[in-house]
Length: 153
Image (cartoon, rainbow, N blue to C red):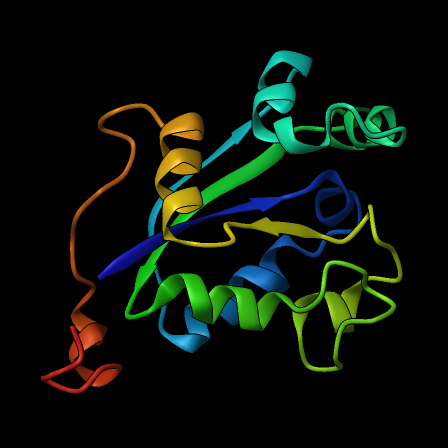
C-alpha cells in the first residue's frame, strides 16, 4: 500500500476544518498511519519549499505556515497519493472543482487548507522530513477488507 503526507495548514486549524477534512479521507477508505501536531519553523519550511525560496512571495508562505501549529499526517491506502491529490483539488481554491477539499473550503492560492505530496518520490522525502522513525505505524484497520478488493493491494 502507498503512503503519503498531508499537512493541515494553519488556515484549516484556524477555521476549525480539520475534523471535516479528516473525515473525508477516512470515509474514502484511507488509513491514518501517523499523525501529530507541530510548530513549523523557517529552516524546515525552507527545506520543504526549497523550489519556492527564491520567489517573491516566499515570505507569505513563511508567515502563513508559521501562524499556528499544523497537523501532519501519513495516510495509507491503495494509490493513496493519487487519491489524496484528486480529493485535494487545484492549488488555487478559486479554481478547484466543487466537491474537492479546496473547492469546498478555500478561496485562496495560499490559504488553501492542506498540503499533499505530489508524487511517490516527494511523499517518501516529505514523510521522512516530518516524521521520525517509529512515528509511522504499519497496521491494517479491520475495515480494509471491506474497502479494497482482494487483488487491490
